[in-house]
Length: 119
Image (cartoon, rainbow, N blue to C red; front, side, top):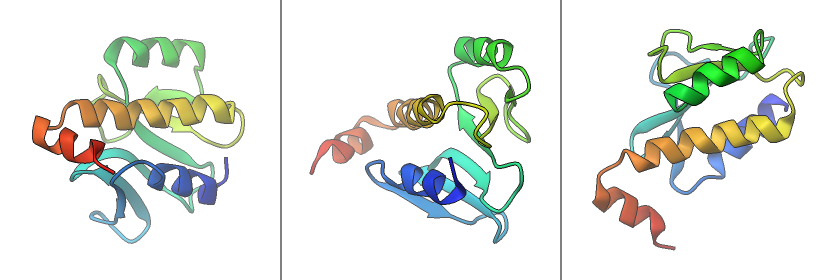
């Protein structure tokens, strides 16, 4: 997945926005003010921090040892840093991004979740 594809996919989710709260190089993708993806789109290799169910996080790290590691500068129980340089199938990367978005949305207050469901 290219940096442009990663950015476009993250922004394709309902109410997703890109923000730069840390520095001009770090893209932070949020839904209702909550982070679901964090990346430096200019970095090589391209990596992205994604929220993950703790049990799935451990399994993914074991299955993809050098490509999925505990989240850099994040809560290591709930976040993974995923290398998006093409070694991991794009389909799996898209699933991980979608799972991250879904986990964040599930943790939002009910009123925010209802607003997201409206067209």
